[in-house]
Length: 238
Image (cartoon, rainbow, N blue to C red):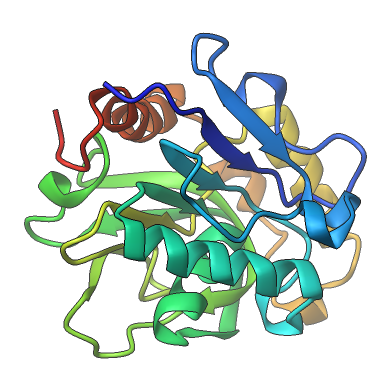
């Protein structure tokens, strides 16, 4: 069993960042906020950690900010060392970019509640449990895409986005585009903020709120499954 802490990379640019309960209190972890800290404080080595989680962000991975480029080094080092890695939204895209150069502007951005469908056989390849079809909050203008590399395994898609989840073949690395971790207050607040910027961004307002749903078990199934791998000291599903 590993005694090394988990690294939570909180990429949010506001003053609040990830919810306080993003990491359960029982999990020994270090929280780094790369957009708020000196560049040298952003780690590039995965060696000290039992696993790494990279959050969402209002930043774009395509902007290649100095701190996000350091995180790309961290992702590559985690792959090389076999350190488990889980990315959400921005983190998902960052992993795809760092390892496969597979991030781009989304042709059809998703802001709101959309149906996500697992690929056949994907349930066993996710870090934890998830239903074959579910509706979840999404908010992104960039996306990961399938580069056609044999190690890039697409696990889930939506009507607007081909890669809603992926894993790296032969490595304990996963990314999810959807925001299963956001509760209704956070998701609705972010939706209102995005809508205020105008429909020219591709946001559908009319009727979208009627689709709003939240299933805490979806996030807990995926995230607790990932955390269980860290405590077991293995990338394999317990």
